[in-house]
Image 1: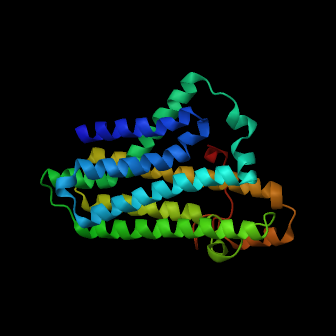
Image 2: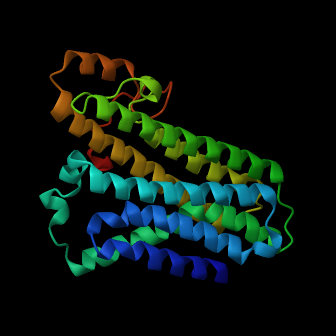
Length: 267
């Protein structure tokens, strides 16, 4: 698995941006790492890169670049986001050992997330009979997830320009309170299902599953933080209370309206 060592090196190198500021391990460094890993995977298997896998890698590349740019621009332009980003608990210098452990954890998680398409290509290169139907399905689902996330971010940005002090409840936010997180879960679900047709070994399934479970956990943890923050800001607003009682938190049609009581989601 020399290709995994190469990708791990890329993941460590790019996510190291978190050493400049702690939160970048999870934000800008995350987006850049996914894009870099997508390019790295494409280069490693360039001679045998079928169209659906190429599309999926392209989707992941676009997702990572868009996310990194979106977060960078928001950090520069949004006063409210700066207030959240530079809270005392985030700006306090972390012990060296803690920083190293976070860096290692993030680098490994990012490898796990992108591993399904990597395993698909590696097994194909070794002569395995992979199923392109699952690759096409994964690429389509992942692309849909990226579109949903981008639309949700655009709708929230537009709404905040109109009224910065009101919560967003129109557009995709009519269906879920965190449609951007839903879009990301959908994207990584698409990336993960390519494993079904990739002739994965048990070890490959374990790595891919840990990556998928890890990012879903991160999304629900993020949704919990948003829920707690919105409770502080809008908790006394009757319209907001009615909105959260009828609108699922992150998954459409799934009646999960709150996760704030689950302290194990704290991340």
